[in-house]
Amino acid sequence: MLSVILPSYNEEKMIAVATDRLAAILGEAGIDYELLFVDDGSKDKTWAEILSCAARDTHVVGVHFSRNFGKESAMFAGLEQAKGDCAVVIDCDLQHPPEKIVDMYRLWEEGYEVVEGIKEDRGEESGFHKFAANSFYGLISRATGMDMASSSDFKLLDRKVIDTLNALPERKVFFRALSFWVGFKKAEVSYCVQERTAGESKWSTRSLIKYAITNIASFSSAPLHLVTVMGVVTLIVAVVFGVISLVQKLTGVAQPGFTTVILLLLLIGSFLMISLGIIGYYLGRIYDEIKGRPRYIISRICGREGETK
Image (cartoon, rainbow, N blue to C red; front, side):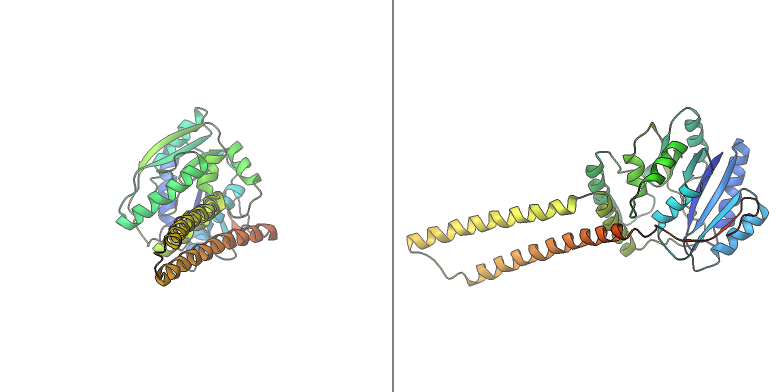
């Protein structure tokens, strides 16, 4: 059986659309499946729509969070609840083309354990967004040693991979990078990002920046290395200005250097504050991990022959 995991946040207009479209595609392909909607603490009627779809379609399973925990938590909740021999993670807005699920499933039948959805294009995005995305994936690619420039959350995972990811103890997770990191036999399916047919995107520039910072910190120590780089730069500047000052003093041509002193103090002070901020952020992440709180809290489950919690 194939589990289709659909993280959902304020997607009341897309639940029924996604259910009907996926049912038609997977039914026509003869694939046994379940549709696992994870309501990430939506504020609209998303959960009511999931309940409605579960009442008329036994393939639909709904998981409801007690509050909004974020997409990463929703995806991992779906992986932990999935009963299938393999699972596909796909956006509820269907910007990931659901027809590609069949291609992924056929590759899985051939023995591939991770089938990556690779973007041929990023759709309609601003120049700033594309630049930020490329910078982000450049950092993550260097951290993982794998090219993630065109990767996405749209992918199929074998049961062995699902169990491996579920066994990871960390709380702050980055699904896209972890599914690369675990390895296993991989294949790729390319796709073009589709336009949303209903509803609005939940991603603002601010939320994307926060998402990038959180995931870089959770999967890479590169920002901590930046502290060392800034220290080396400060040392080089100090040596250069120290040599210049010493030479001027010995030759008797030393000039008043008030402006230079102020600039150096501002430079060093800025580096120190940035360094403390980076170290403090990582300490905060360590603190969150030590507390050991769950990634999410499930308040209700519907579907699976009337199972409700």
